[in-house]
Image: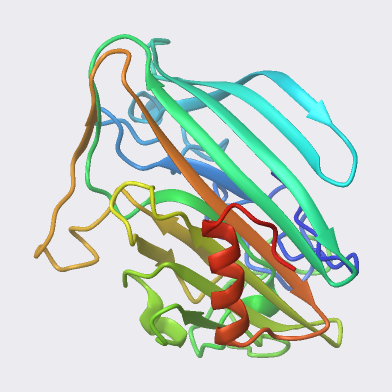
Length: 290
């Protein structure tokens, strides 16, 4: 899903590689918009696939194919439902996906409810423990966490610059999770929700991702990186816990598993932990955020 916009029209997702902007990172071409996939399904990588993968390496990567729109409704709430196939390199469909998004919001907020059901199409499907998953977005440069790491940025011609630079200009992001942990330390930690806040175009922007209690491996680990990757991963534990935990999740033929998340985008103010916690309770009770 691309792009994601705040209520004031600000694009909170990174533009690269679809609509590159000057001054943003040009790494990880498989990171764009808001997505749902996993890095190791029956030993095939569905996370890192992109047009940048050389042909000779494509046998290691799976593809998620959009099959059709099954529902599209407008009104006070918008609804979009789609069907997808998870396809192995040999063309075999191993998972059938049914996903529905519900959209709502207010003067200074946007809400996206995400529901996905995955069904094993033929044989057994095994989600190996992998840090690369599962429901994630890649945010704009301004919402990254400040860093002194040299990086390649897009130049005015929208091409990768010839040299790495160290720059904190306009980079204002910071994470906070439901357990009170902030900054880079949220990566890999278990939490019910995580907030990423910063400033864009002179306005406060905050993005919150929430995981429902009925999701597998709750509360989940978070694949939240300082460079702008912001995701929640219920099917990863080993790397996050340095081997203390491991989760390899299996579906038998015809068996299904479901996931539910909420994404909130605020402009005009940075909601406090107490405000986010109240919004999380509304989410778990099946209500919209006020």
